[in-house]
Each structure stands twice: as structure tokens, then as C-alpha cells.
Image (cartoon, rainbow, N blue to C red):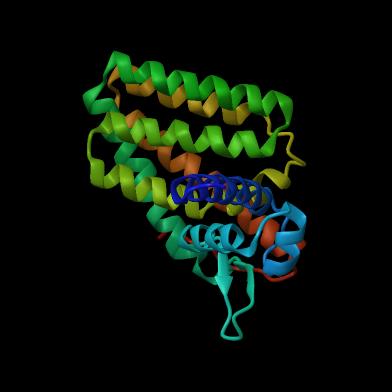
Length: 234
């Protein structure tokens, strides 16, 4: 018979497994926004009791990826397209301040981490692996923020990038997950500007990087969702 500590450990392992699996499915859009997440069916699917399922859903809710409705049903969180203008305004600001800050400070050791994530991103692009692209892109920009040295900016930027993972998934889908080499090259240009300490060049690249994402998402919404939304960063 298991003791209490063993039960907690096993349950925690189950919770983590469910959380990781559902999180990947939500972020990859395999589970579409608004999809129901029934505890009974999930319990049957994962062959677990409802307790670790419920705990995993609570973690996903904390990530903003699932929503509990007034009737207590749980669904995959919808994407609020109306909030995109303010989201992109904040995201663009973080691209700028972190890339500028990194160019001002420069650090060879942290740049090794930046380059490692850039290689992961390039490999994911070559493999047409959207989920890996999203993960590597997030780590690339967070490592630049860490180089900039303001932990408040880093935490806020990481949160924005996490909130925007599904938006980025839609963005990559506009290319059928075959992201042009241009986007790998843009990261390389950012690295070059940071290593050169060229603050203004880093700033210009950050602005352009954000602008093309906004433009592509705007076109996606207008074309594929038949609900044009004006996304402005001014």
C-alpha cells in the first residue's frame, strides 16, 4: 500500500503528464479555441482519476489557456481578436526595449544562450515544426531580454510571449508552417546588431519584426476568419 507521500508524487506525475499533453495540443491548435474539456472523458483518455485531471486544468487556467464557464464546464480559452491592437502595442514595446537594452549591455556568455536558441529556431523552421518554432522563438527573445538586464521587462515579455503562442501558431499557419528563411535571417540581424552594440539598428529591427507579424496576422483575420480587424500599433 502506498503511503501519503507516494500518492502525492504519483498524482503530481499524472498531473504534469496531462498538463504537458493538453498544453501542447492547445498551443498547436490541435484543440481549437472553444473546444470542451470534459473531466470524465479526459479521465478515460488518460486512464487517471479526475483529481490529476482537475489539477492539470487548474494549471492551464492559470496559464490563460482554458476557461471555466458559469455552468462549471471547462473549454479551451477563446482568442480575443478584439484585444489584439493593445496586445501588439505592448509586444512591440517589449521587442524594442529588450533588443535595445541587449545592444547596450552585451555579454558574450549570454550571447551563447541566444545563439543556441537561434539554432533551435532555425532547425525547427527547416523541419517545418510549428510547435518547436514557437518554443524556440520564445526562448530566443526571452534570452535577449535577460541580456538586457531588467528582470521586470523580462518577466512581462515572457508573459506576453506565452499569451501570444496561439497567435504565433496562426501566424505560422499563414505560411503552411513553411516559414521563409527570411525570418531566421531577421533573428541573425538582431544578433549582429546586439553584438555590434548598435542600439539604433537593434531598435529598427525590433520595430520591423513586430510590424510584419502584425501585418500577417491582420491579413489572416481578414481572409480566413472573414472578420477584418484593424490592428494598429500607433
